[in-house]
Amino acid sequence: MASLRTWWKATQPHSFVASLVGVALGTAIAWREARTFDGLALLLTAVGVVCLHAATNMSNDSIDFRRGVDDLPPELVSPFTGGARVLPDRALSVEAHRRVWIALYGVAALIGVVFAVTRPNGWILLVLGAVGGLIGIFYTLPPLSLQYHGIGEIAVTVIFGPIVVLGAYAVQRGALGWEAFLASLPLGLLVAAFLLVNEMPEHRTDPKGGKRTIPARIGLEKSVVLYEALVGSALFLLVAFSVLQWISWVAVIGLIALVPLARARAVLRAHYREYPAHIPANAGTIQAVLLLGTAMTLAYLISAAANL
Image 1 (cartoon, rainbow, N blue to C red):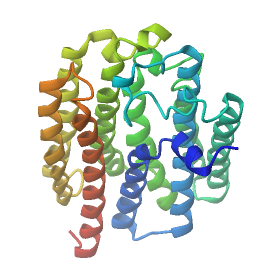
Image 2 (cartoon, rainbow, N blue to C red; image 1 turned 45 degrees about the horizontal axis):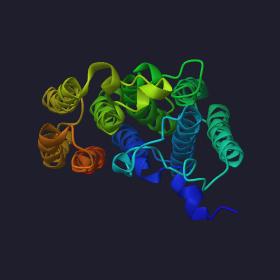
Image 3 (cartoon, one colour; image 1 turned 135 degrees about the vertical axis):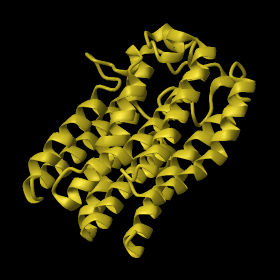
């Protein structure tokens, strides 16, 4: 029988940062606007989003394993590539693995239905949850297989930006808000950059299983340029929205993400053809996601406390 540690590894928990900072940001924006906060609702939101994220990670691994995509040479295996490795390493059976990710999708759906029934304007949460759930389900699963067709970056921008942030905001406020939507965009773009840099080492192996990611389609050099464009767009929008006061001007402290991003970009430029030499670029990008999301959340809490 597999250990809890093995099951935890199967969910790829290091990636949950991308989900949880969005939940925190949406909740903080709602607090600043209306001083409204429901702790139990926040907890359920976080659990639902993490369950959806974990289920998507696991279903992705399941399809990749079935198609032979995760059959990687040792030098390409890292915490950022090849999935959780629990299926290729035979740490879990395919059947048990499938049952768990289906159950996780079920838990996420159940929480969404509870919110739809119990929260004000629950239809908003139903729509957001349905869109997020469908993106998660069809991220890898047929017939859409979004990542297999090079649409993964668009999918994660939408789900980890507007869907998660607006969803957390709407759980607290019972409404949608333009500020929450705008604040979510830099975060979503950085998560897309994280996905892109993770796909790059597998640009030659992925197509063997029919997985035509962006790096597989356009090559590594253009992928580096796209990475820079995603990161640059995220930071530009953060500054522009803050200066225009379309979001809290204090949110500009999110530029602290430049620290790991500058190093990540330099490493990627120098070593984009060499793996594991560009692992610091992967690590730096997810650190930037954490820093940006945390800084923006703190900015809204500071704004609320100081009436800024």
